[in-house]
Image 1 (cartoon, rainbow, N blue to C red):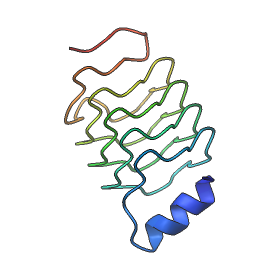
Image 2 (image 1 turned 180 degrees about the horizontal axis):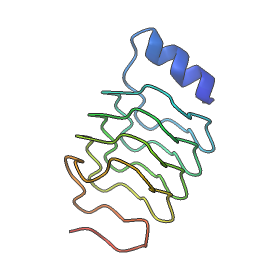
Image 3 (image 1 turned 45 degrees about the vertical axis):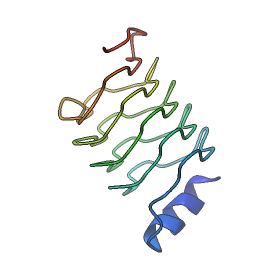
Length: 110
C-alpha cells in the first residue's frame, strides 16, 4: 500500500490498517490519529511530523522509520519494533504503552 492510498482511505473514514504493508511509505505530516496500525510493516517509512495521537501500533514494525517530530501521544506501542528509528523531537514520552517494545537503541522496554 502506498502512502497516498492510506491517506485517501483515512480521509474517507477508514481507520483500520492492521497488517498493512507500508514499507518505505511516504507519510510525512500525515494525519493518522486514532488509526489502527497493529502489526503493520512501517519499516523505513517517512513519518516525520505525522499525527499519530491515540494510534494503535501494537506489534508494528517501525525499524528504521523516520518519526522525527511525530506526535505519538497516547499511542499504544506495545511490542512495536522501533530499532534504529529516528525519534528526535518525537512526542513519545506520553505514549500509552511501550511495554515489550524494542527501542531505537535496540534495548527492550519491559
